[in-house]
Image 1 (cartoon, helix red, strand yellow):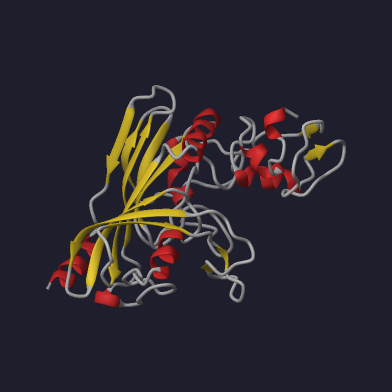
Image 2 (cartoon, rainbow, N blue to C red):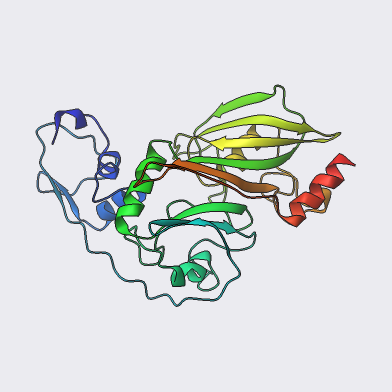
Length: 293
């Protein structure tokens, strides 16, 4: 074990290794008994000592058994290493309980996506909620996936959202630093009141003020589940249309007014800057005009 690993959590140290690449992958390996410290399994929260010996068994990636589906998807940018897809609202990113078909992954299988070590999530680097629209970057190889994950960990993959909230921010710019995890009383919700907190950072700036709403540009420092919706609700700026943390049905919306409008990052192979923008979908544009009126 290198000296610089002393005191580090086992899962966090593994996530930095090239052959692992993410915290989620590290946790899976630990749960499957593929990680031994001094010959014995340890929990993901184990703090490492410099003299300990780490044994790691990373399995070969399994080919996906999913079948491609013909979904109407717009590719906003692509090359041989990766693609950026503009996800419509209403589509789940990858298969999960209750979503065995019709996911974004099914629609991308015919476009040579790959990487990540999970057969049900080939190429997926980050996610959007089902009813959030906008841009995601997807890998086309294991190496591309590792490099994109590295950009994500280093916060070099810039993710910006356009969000309409009910209320008026106290300042034109703000930064929210508050850990998020499963709510203590309702595990279907994310919350600041949690027994499993994980660091979360959200920055926002005001774009436009309306009589009862404000349009914000929001940048993620971390990517926790429901992060933007939870953080903005915590400062009394609930997301318009959000049925869980915000104002359901506000302005006639049938979903939360949350759109992943911009991705920017250095290309993981060439280091050339990649910047991709996505316009507001028609339903959000219509709600915006109602907010103005």
